[in-house]
Image (cartoon, rainbow, N blue to C red; front, side, top):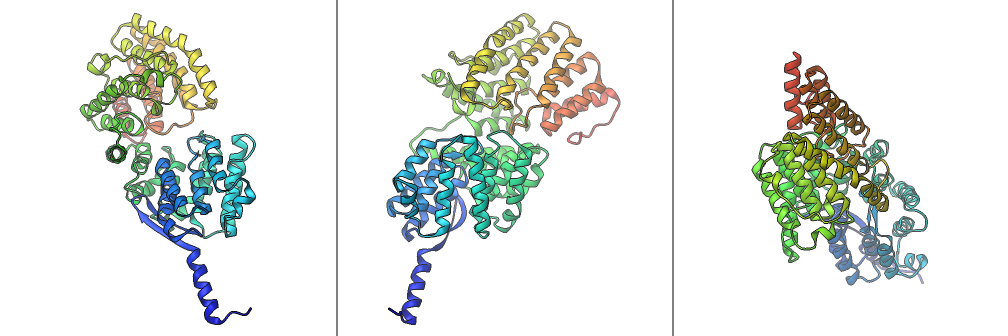
Length: 519
């Protein structure tokens, strides 16, 4: 049957309406994504897509499920929900949960592809099938990155395809910073960020790609923009501070994490949950307060986390945890250690706070590290030696837990405990008056830390080893060598207050002229 010109025009209009270049601008960012979902499902789908780019996975899941409820055959909504279970930068993936989502769309790949009206949507579904397919996670991550590269090439005007390709590249590093991979991702993202300045994924992934002191200047415009792009996303507010911290921009670190904590606790209140005083954003805020000379504000954060960590059951929750962000008890111990070391208040109120660490190896080890460091700095070498013995006894358990968790061999989390052990040995020797031996051990710790991959965020271990090396060298009467050590400390932690003070003191004693921040 031959259609009239008017009918053909009407059909074309209906087809155009069904393949909407849907655009949404909200507190989560602005995204535009051509899709064939029902018009009523566009708002939750696009908000979910923006929150997926923001790593606000819990909220993204809720949005995608709303879109699925409105349009049960909306293939891209199921794709989006499945994507929320892959946390590429964090090297986390819940494959069974993602496959369960895809199986709700259809029991087989072919059944699912039939729900996707366009070849582009089918390509997106094929890519996620590769991500959650057979084989090892590493093999699937590499294959998925290749698939996203092809998708991006096939649809050069699809900004999200490019963004997800860059994120897939970051994921092939398997949670370990690989500068070559990260710069490949940055090369994809940077020109697009300037072309699409309100897209949350482009700014976010560019920050991740440049998250170290050397490359951070490349992402400073993205960091300055991202908080405005997604003002209602707590992770977006915090993420800007990754670049600010890497550049030693302490006031901006404070501002960003105050905003992140505020947005996060607002979201918790909306869900009927109490505010949290522990965790990632609070730890970074504590560090910002310490670096800006506001120890009382930092102390209030530590105190709040202490109350949270002291609640019943927290020690048990931390038993098999290696990341302080995953357990209030570990978070408190980390915050307490940070406060004591950065204020050098070895005998103050915060240093005396105690908490039941249970029998978790990381909690006990971190507690022994702080105790041993503080005891040595107070001059109690015997007590420091007891803490050192406790660390030695716990190291095999720490290693066993890291093995069970599959932490890569070159991850800072795996290598830091041995360095912390050397640091306590060094300060114990110093307390015993053996300065030459102390300097040798501190130098050994510094050399080991220099070989660590850069760990974004506040220094880890909490005491930068080159900073400690410089302090011991100054006490030994070697200001020129100390000056060199403090300059090395600046390379990993630019503009850090204690390293700056040490550098100025060493330079003055050595008779040279140092410019803080320009080692």
